[in-house]
Image 1 (spheres, rainbow, N blue to C red):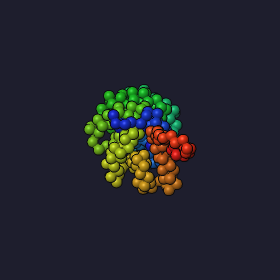
Image 2: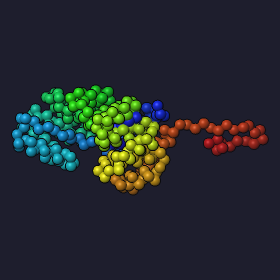
Image 3: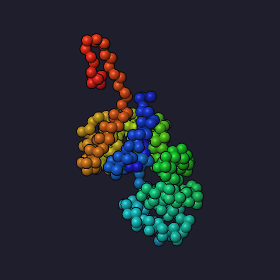
Image 4: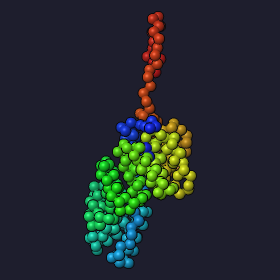
Length: 299
């Protein structure tokens, strides 16, 4: 949903159907995803916790903290200004370069964001933050194999990192490997019990793979907490919508979206239910020579 991720022999949706649904979610996401992503990709904040570098001065660390806070609060102009100042003072600042990549990622300029992430990763190949940025860019550019490989690189450096594991699940899910995504996310949850983004991605994966009821149960466990991310509620609404429970979906969506957007999403759910429903065979009609059969009776 704003833009992964995700668990996915039960009856599964065709890969193409799941991709159509995901693509529709990203488009219809003007309203639904205004609060997401996951897509989720994976979907958490673009900035990550950064370790204190040994060669960082108190002044640069203070600026970095302010820049990170500005980015988290959505003040991209201030964040960009501060990150640029940090990089100007130290062109090899991994934190500054990653921060600039994050600001560009936040406004959807994924190509330029990738340039900064790559530069940072070349300076410090063991730094997880720029690698996670590279993987997220790859997901948005639909280079899912690249994203999967990059998340594996992160997990070599920081095993069981929940952000990388959630992103890996999202990438596998978007590639169409729903079972692989679900297995990875379930394993990740055994190592990071209760992590909300892992649970959200697992729930969404179940929905997209044709198991909206099971997905709803997973998402309900997340949304029961007051601090649950908005994406969890939106994915739960999707699950109810795919189950045909528009009343429950509307009630959930109404907490975050205006009425017009709620109705847009309900119509979208209806379209997806019709698109993904198996075709119904026409009933067999016994031949009655004296009574013509009307076309309407064949529906």
